[in-house]
Image (cartoon, rainbow, N blue to C red; front, top):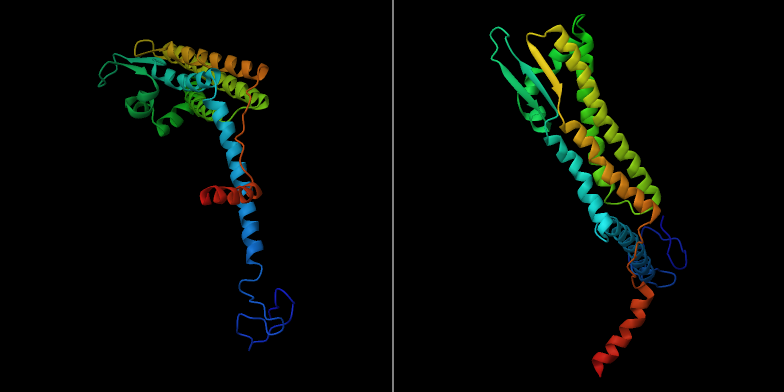
Length: 260
């Protein structure tokens, strides 16, 4: 059984009218003003919280030359993967046309490089007694490169919302991790190239391209910029929002001006 919200009188099943049979208050609208005020205050608090977050994002990305440069430079290492990362030449193989494969991010994803080294074939090569170790290095190179791309994208996103020195320090760590993964990809591919060429000197030639190390070096400016933002932090200027009470006080004044 329900109770009256005002006098707390117990209501019967026959009390179907909106008015309380004891105190006569309209139970549907009772307390509506307080509820509306509470909802308005809640909406105001949520808007203030959202505005503060928006102010921090703006301060982290567009409210300063260093912040803008950080955003631009943090995407360049990913673009660096479009440079030649490695080269593999196939020659003198029966029934296979001689070709040189220049590997970069686009060919790695869309072209014949992944068709040549498919996942099933790669797993079979890894378990092979003769070519197992070189292809383990090859698989490690691919994994390190993929992780470097993922971490680089995460770092790009973080730079949009990193205004505090603590966040900038984390950005430095993320950039260093992405750089080290790119270097590890180049080193493991070099080990693969050395091993596979020794096994098949007449059929395969492989080498690391300059692009992988250029990509790694492109993380350095981002690290430096985040370091400067740690030493000289970003000042976030928060937007001052009128409170609900102030809006009510200003309304009669505006009405008076309109009446005059």
